[in-house]
Length: 172
Image (tube, rainbow, N blue to C red; front, side, top):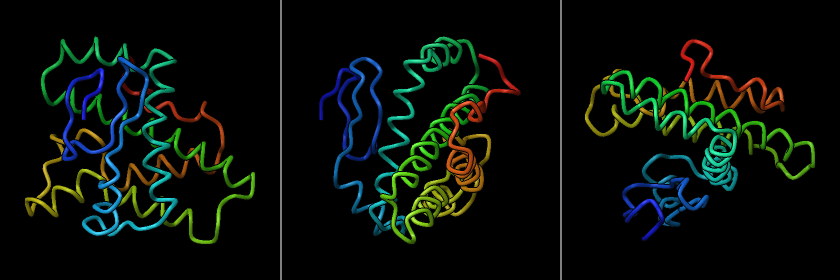
């Protein structure tokens, strides 16, 4: 598919393009989420969308432009570490959205578990273990399963985007 960020194949998975402010999701990804990642459910799918919308929020707040400028001057390991902070913040924002979805009464029993399972299944460590049989933390660019789950839950429990500052240790 074409985006203002270039061509993306289904293999690239869901993504946010800051050049046009749109979220791109190949719907086949949801089959993968259910089958390959063992993360079924409508709220698992909603978590993925909310995470990508979280990147749009970051773009509006200036986090993404600052990240993109900063990572150009960093080596691969440092750029990956900063990328993890960006991704975990998007997970936290997704959790904030989930908090308000729950307050509106639109969540069903088990929905939170679906999102937390999805966050766990698509952590860098889980993906690396599944695909290559071992884990290389220095290469993480989205965060570990535990961190993705934790930051989603922080946003969900607090319902306040102000708690989503994953950059406290590393300022942009």
